[in-house]
View (cartoon, rainbow, N blue to C red):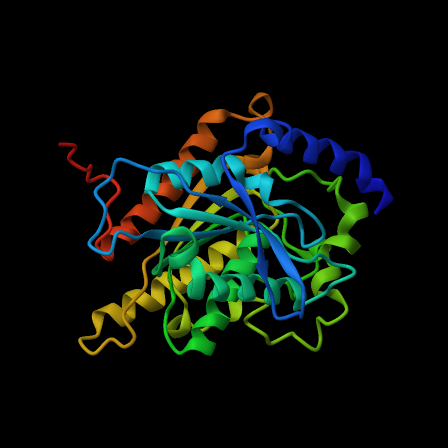
Amino acid sequence: MLLLLPFTFFSYTWKCLPYFVDGPFVVYRIPTRRRGETVRALIYNHPGSYQRPVNNLRPLHVDIHGGGFIGGIPEYDAPFCTQVAKTTGAVVVSVAYRFAPRHPYPAAHDDIEDAILWLVENSEREFGADPQLLTISGSSAGGTLALGASLNIKKREGKELVKGIVTFYTPVDLRIPPQDKRKPPGFPSMDLSWPLFPLFDAYAGMGRVLNNEDPRLHPTLIPSQDWPADTLFIIPMLDILRYEQLELVERLQKDHAECGESKNAQPPTKRIEKLLFEGQWHGWLDLPTWAIDESTRRKAFTAACDFLMDTHRKYRFDARQKSVVA
């Protein structure tokens, strides 16, 4: 952990510095099942010129940051959350959670589920958001949490609260330790992050055998008929997580296509899409402009926002339909 401190300090400072004076969000504390404990959340609530629906509520979007289950802050995703709020008209809530190794599975999943269920009950009153039009996004570990939480909430509530999901470079099979994952062509022969593999594996590691068949932890195990929502997978091709995501997408698309061909398809088929980025690696969207091809970030964020707006339109909210000013 000590080896991570200089990098962590630099990355946190770089991400947070622009928001110390004038951030695009307000900080909120959301209660959890742990008595007296809360999780920190950032609320992006940008007024827009779109036409308000009859109920005068805007979509609710929950974002979950990455960090290998061992770190990270909601500010990591501030550029993306700001774009989602301004482009889609949604009230965006970016949520923190507990980290391994001190808090292994299911701590982070519990925190995210608690936050989402609290928002479902309270976001209309607190933020003017529609809990019936809920979407989620997550980067890396945050994507795993988004998929697992959506599944578990669907099971607990007996209905699909989450209408759409966007994931960025998400591990979907934590049964395989990082060092054993298949490397794509062009990947360095020696992964320079290998000293951190035990930490990256800390969330699932000690309980891996016990939780080896748990789809909440390993989204690749979710049966196609139980897949929780329409999903867009954004996948860099120079990533050891590439193959597990592609295999999951292929399986879901095949199964839902076959289900859609049946006249008695139950439940309704889900929209499963992927967007591939050649030559990009895990976490590239979190890097500064000078370190990446900025057009790839614009393409990824725009695709995510378009996917979310398509989901909103299915439920009769259209941010592209501008309001008429008298």
